[in-house]
Length: 67
Image (tube, rainbow, N blue to C red):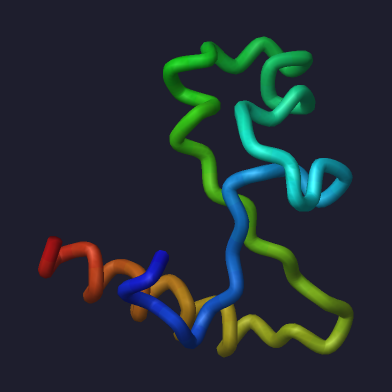
């Protein structure tokens, strides 16, 4: 996510902030560890608009194309 500094994201659950490792939430949901270790969490707030979400998706998509 370093390629998209305009967006805040995390690789862990919000309740595991600051801890390294695979999300216990995803494991409890039955997500395979090999998949869970690549998960990224995006947080939305009440004022987040659909336009902002679309812009974030477009930014991420464009930046990932350059990887």
